[in-house]
Image (tube, rainbow over the protein chains, first blue to last red):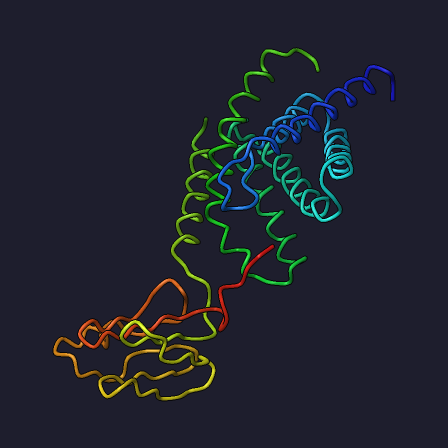
Length: 161
Length: 111
């Protein structure tokens, strides 16, 4: 790893962590836990397009670990990492299948929510968490769309991250 | 934004609608008469329930339905069987409501 790559990874990781913090400051729909702005997903998506898959995975790992250490706790770590891994896999696959950036972002956000829901179902040992599935899917689509458009512009305008 | 993108998004939207309209699979049924709780029965024991002197409900194989009623329109009987929390059986003239619920206590509180 050269210093250029190290700098890029550090920058994106820090950005992703800050995005996570901002997300926690802006409450969206308090009744349904798990609805988030999803801007950290945009950072990971950006990494997938501008760098390579394993780097993006590494950045996601750093984001989830540091965020959990700094802000929340072990429980949140498990939810986040499940959501992060599923979302990363989905986004990488969809990018390879040549879907548009906005679609990849939307589906990635949806996958993130589904991953978190499965983790919650496993941790709490109940399937009743899936009661929240539809509002979570819908918010994933909506916020994924917004972050997807922003990410698309950034991918096009920012040269070689 | 190609055709495959639209298809994928529509597929997710359909999934949303599908999950939004299906209730939780039920293990119990709550029967209220005149607004007051009459009985909570398990859906796993086939049983006939006499509700007051106006209605009879029956549990059969995890589903519950109105078997007989003294109301003139018999709409409650035509409502058929319910087995998830998205539907109820209501007999308006006799003020009987049957709901399928997942948990016999209060709704499960997550977190």
